[in-house]
Amino acid sequence: MEQIRVGMVGAGFAADFHVEAFRQVKGVDCPVVAVTSARAESREAFARKHHIDGVYASVEEMLEKAEVDVLDVCVPTNMHAPVSLLAAQAGKHVIVEKPFTGYTKELWDGEGGEWDGDVPLIGKFVDRRVMLDSVVAQCDEVEKALGDAGSKFCYAENWVYAPAVQKARRLIEAGKGTVLRLLAEESHSGSHASYAKYWALAGGGSLLRTGSHPIGGVCYIKQAEGLAKYGKPIRPKSVMAETAFLTKVESYLAEPKRHVGGVLADCEDWGAAYITFEDGTVADVCSSDVVLGGVYNHMQIFLSNGRIKCNMNPIDAVMAYGPADDSFGEEYLAEKISTRQGWNYASPDEHWASGYHQEIQDFMGAIAEGREPLSGWTLARDVTAVIFAAYVSAWEGRRVEVP
Image: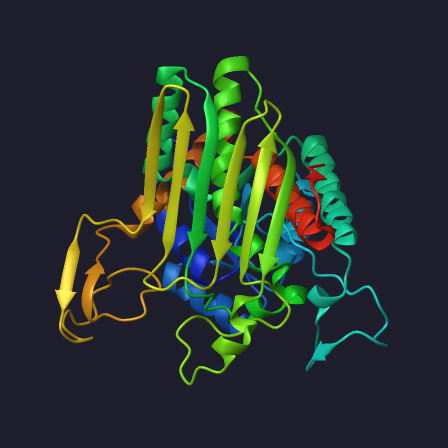
């Protein structure tokens, strides 16, 4: 059995379930042999929990001292591109959590603008065209390094690997119809991460954080359709978009009790994008932080010869009613539900339904076999370009070409 040694960059939530997924990979031995993270206590605790021998203070130290074949990047968005670049320059393969990158730069010297404590509110004043140019430049730099090294890039967009989406792909390919229109959304009640309220830390708002999933989903379906029919992906061409700050409307702020996520400092909490693809077909995508009742992930595909609905969340295989929050003890029900009282969708295996284990299986197979993963560089780049072209569209109020 071929062995692929993994170095984990990050020691948080995503890194935790990635390690579990590596242990379930079939046909490839992929031990996690090293870990690094920003905080010493977190990386050391992570290493103890998962029995990892190599603990390093930085990515640079890991690349210098550890024998690793692939870096699994599970850190905040602002570090995705820099770590990917380091990995590629060292000749390593790379797995990167979504979205690939955002905009986190400060473009002024501290005079003017607005601050919230030590954080500049760049989402209020930085021209979105500047942001688009910046993320495209990041993509160019990483793409060149990947090409020079011959490194595989694995984009951890779990929507691609959700069983519902993969079944939809197979149905489309078998029927040989045309994907005329796609409709997709990911929404929930707000991020748990404290940094998500600031553009300078998160790289963008809801359209980036949650919108990357449905945008990745629709771009993947058109990419797969093109590969099956023509041997090359059908890629996004232009976008029109709008964003909003719904938790800042006066009536909401006046409510004595607020149920959706905290008010974001300078990030939008709702976004919608209308994407036109190279073949003239379209997709409309929505994302938000103002939807109660758990995570809402769905996609509809309108074909020339059929129609497909993909419901990733919620899944109604198990419905559980509890008259009190503690009716089912500590047993997990579903992500981001606001109450355990009443009826709830009790997901039997949320990680499987979301595609997390399947994506790691595909990534390890792609590296071992020398093939491209289902979710790779083209998708990562296209999603990044669509999102920031959408930000330009909302900023300028017009259609924008996707670079």
